[in-house]
Image (tube, rainbow, N blue to C red; front, side, top):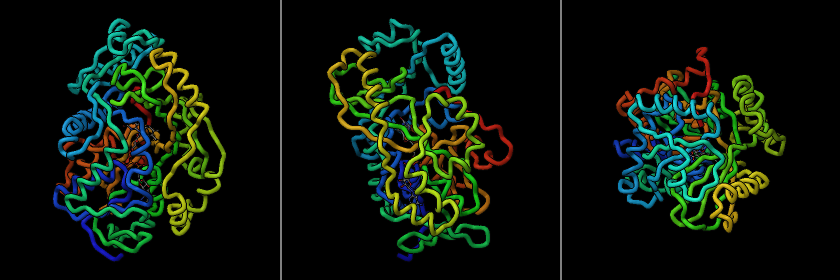
Length: 426
Ligand SMILES: Cc1cc2nc3c(=O)[nH]c(=O)nc-3n(C[C@H](O)[C@H](O)[C@H](O)COP(=O)(O)OP(=O)(O)OC[C@H]3O[C@@H](n4cnc5c(N)ncnc54)[C@H](O)[C@@H]3O)c2cc1C
């Protein structure tokens, strides 16, 4: 392969694929290089919550715009995405939590986003027969859910329909620069010349960017998810009440909890200083492990050639789910929703989430090298944001100016002394 493009996108998760869709729609010649398969990693493994609720205030305008796109996305892509606009519900168990949510509700209202605080009676109407341990909840009616595996696949088909090219099994080893500007990429199948490269490499972005001398503090956290057998339809509202669940149209549930695993790698050490505060706050929810991955991902941190070998020997990150946690999660679902007593785990999976210290992404056109666009670091909530991220990346490239303020997502914040602290409620 020796070719040219207007834009090369690294990674066919929802961020890279949506970017390719909007770029191709705007007339650009786009090539997407994916080391594994389209949406093989986080973008097909997430819960499928599409929520504005609980977001860091900086993300609320993006998610409100994303919400508008989601509402018309099935029509736009001519595909069934299992979109259900049944809202997002989070319960609270203490007065302190209630106060936190009331504050968030006021902030959201300043942006024009409407959410309601619900009492127990309203909760009963929304999720009939529930045994939630809570004082009440907060509900954002305009939120929804969709089926992750279907969404990125549909975006890719639509992008291809507009001329974008997708190469699977095609790892990018290196971004090439000439005189301080991006000039292309070296892939396992050869070189592609392009003046613009989008780094949408998900959990691999930090390792990829290091080859350019750029430091993106990023930590992998493994989340486990189970899908149950079908149960009676109770509610399609995506709900977080200790257990996170969403019931699909066919009656099956996706279930998970906040409990997460961190497999220690060399990156854990390199990035640790930026994450100490966040680790201290979440230490009960995160379990640390030393395992094969810890040994496998060492060499690539120090040489581009070794990184290339790691990218091709980890075509798709497919970690083992934490079965113990998922069995407990199912038992909790049975307790919280007694009508689900007969549902069982049908299948389970896990995915590595790419966390940043403030749990905000980097969506930015960096100055050094020029021509490099970042769309990464979605910190466990980038599925809902995917479509708007794609549109904003296309605007950055094709208009030179995005339609929404991306100041909070600038890459420079990791290095200019900005205090990096999460402000999201969930
Ligand atoms: C368990 C779990 C639950 C989640 N729940 C939700 C939720 O309910 N709602 C929500 O909004 N978000 C959720 N998320 C987060 C969401 O899935 C991610 O934020 C989003 O999918 C990130 O998309 P991405 O395109 O940035 O990354 P990815 O989907 O990870 O895609 C990156 C792609 O880049 C490829 N790649 C990497 N390096 C290279 C290279 N050098 N060359 C070529 N290809 C490369 C990878 O193979 C990968 O396919 C969840 C995530 C997990 C794991």
